[in-house]
Amino acid sequence: MTEQHRKPVRLAHAVLQAAVEQDLGKAERLLHRLNAECPGPGLGDALVAWCDALAEHANDGMPEFGKVRVLDINQETGAQLTELTPTQRWANRMIVARAAGDRRAFEALLAEVNAIGDGRERGRYVVELVLAVAGTIRLFPRGYARMGGVS
Image 1: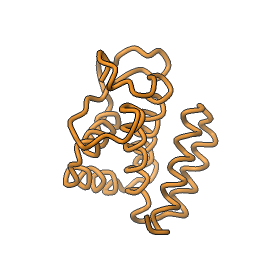
Image 2: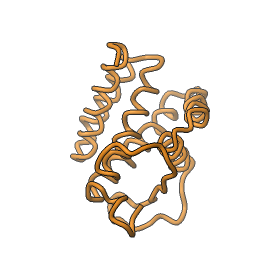
Image 3: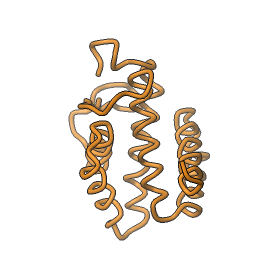
Image 4: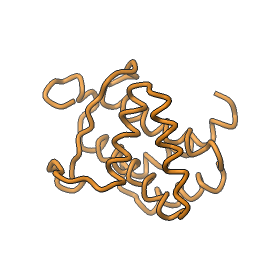
């Protein structure tokens, strides 16, 4: 990993750790830092790191690229969601694209979020993905995808 990729990945992991610990103020400050200090491809590097962290947790080790199923759950209750917001649908598609090794789809989703002119709106998409990954890590045991029943 080159130096230009290390910083966004390091910050991405710090953001995720804070979100898993439900320290959302710290996660937000770190996201602002990531955005300010790692412009351009830094967001893509962070998105890869977050998606890979979810896959690694779900499989108790880095899985090979393949098809995955995303569980849409209420972060507070653990209940399955019946309707998804556009940001949740985008986060799911991003996670699935990365897990499947579908670079074209991943890059298209990255371009989709980068095309949003309003930085706050774009940030909502990124936050949704971070919260989905953090909530899954917090709510499901390591290796849950290999346990059967939940995948």
